[in-house]
Image 1 (cartoon, rainbow, N blue to C red):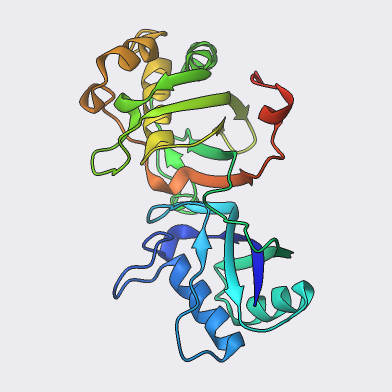
Image 2 (image 1 turned 90 degrees about the horizontal axis):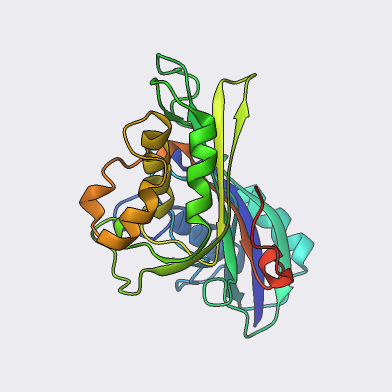
Length: 261
């Protein structure tokens, strides 16, 4: 029995999220189907992810692990999986892992990217891969506001209802925004030790409202205090969100690098 650590990328457009769901197409579902086919197993082989992504959310570096019933070199496993997976999922890396490794419980941090298209009208060719904001934005205000995300805070106001996790305290190591004039996009990036249900999308929504003048620049500090999701209001669409990287003791936070602005 070997445990494999696998890094995958996927286009979340046609998935009902990562987690297995009855009669729904999910990333976990197609991964488990491929693994079971390679193993020729009559029973389910569980593929554990580093975390869930919602319907429509993409991944550049999601990490999963699974236990396989016989020895297969990592390179052969990568090739076999990619020969069976649908075109909207690809295995980028495959390693034989320590038997105790766990894709979810061993994480030390995650990095997310959120892309915002700024055109007045929704671009039909980017509608599944960006959020959209047609209103005016002061990027300098957004940059100043993002500093308030950095550090350890209670993110209750930034967690969607329906989440099962009671402890809403998280640490954000980096929060940045850059402009891409060529594509007329804003690109947000957040790196933290963990994220709550819809947390990044709500953070982006608040930042966009600050950039548009609908909120004071430091309204994030008030939202920490009120612990009220309804006061954060706007949740950016799933289409613009990408899980970029999952860290396992190899992230900047382990070297004391807490701010990248």
